[in-house]
Length: 492
Image (cartoon, rainbow, N blue to C red; front, top):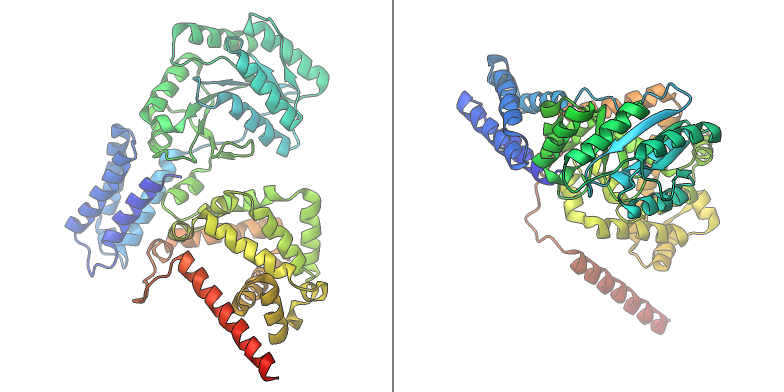
């Protein structure tokens, strides 16, 4: 997400890092790089101009130039201005009535119907029963698509085959929702390839006669400034409560996300980060600004981790951690959840300083490492998984042979398990408030000392081996080990 923008900003901060003394000329050069990065990301020109005026006024002050580390100060200033540009945003939905109506609108191709399903899934996770309403009567495929989503989520979908008036359909759906005990009604309204008067008139009629509690616009984040202009046109007609920006998991440059609130005054409430129905995130300006700067988003990572396990399993794991009985079998079950395609990459995007490592590893290599760890655990006896401290050198060699890995990988996996278990056992001993505070402190530490995670680690002067070369060397070592064993048997 926003790789080009993040790389450009990181390069701007690195250009200032390590200088013995920063002059106003040096600082202006760094600011110019920041400005170029924003313009290349397709941020609105007027928004960039105002953003740079705010940053320059603070960055060129005597207090910053004479500080111990001006480059850190500049990044902190940019971070605060990004937060101001994105927020304040309130991702919550006011659901105060017995039946609450959310009207979803947007152009064709923006992902509106899929986003209706994502929002229904998001509500289900919060124990709220939704109903989907097929109010896009111009496109029969949209009705069928909504019914498929409803079956996937086990959510009721209200349709009226042959109906011609979307207002009547929406009104009837609200009445049916009350009868079926649905607290939220999500209206999937009609879209067009472009904004036209007929579309707007229909949406205005639904807004006036059905009186939805929330009007949300779905916009395609890959459209750039066209998405901003669409949001402006829809807001002029409907007075939007918020936006949902989709397709931010692709090569979207981020200009629309950083521009839309400043241009339209409408906050972005949610972002779509994938095609699956669980790929919907509430937008938190602090976390998103931190992610744009490559500093991770610890709160989003904790939320994502919570979604991987159900409440019953989470309570069981917490109990085992409190009793200090967390075993390698439990560790393996958590690793198996991360093997899903793309999920490990997603977790790494939330972690401070993981961008360079993620680029070096690639999703395939990272997933392969997880599978090797699972293979190591599978090669252990039940007793060894229960009590890993009994694994001595001979057991380690036997496990390595069974898993097809060198012994040092078994040792490294056991050390990682022990370190992770210690951290989790310490966290579970405190309450939820203390855990959240610990996560926030970690995020703030990354923001205060960004270059510990932004700068590249110095590489050795030796040759960096590719994954194929490392695998070939491993096979050669195993072949040599087998040859020596054969010689020993012959000698015996």
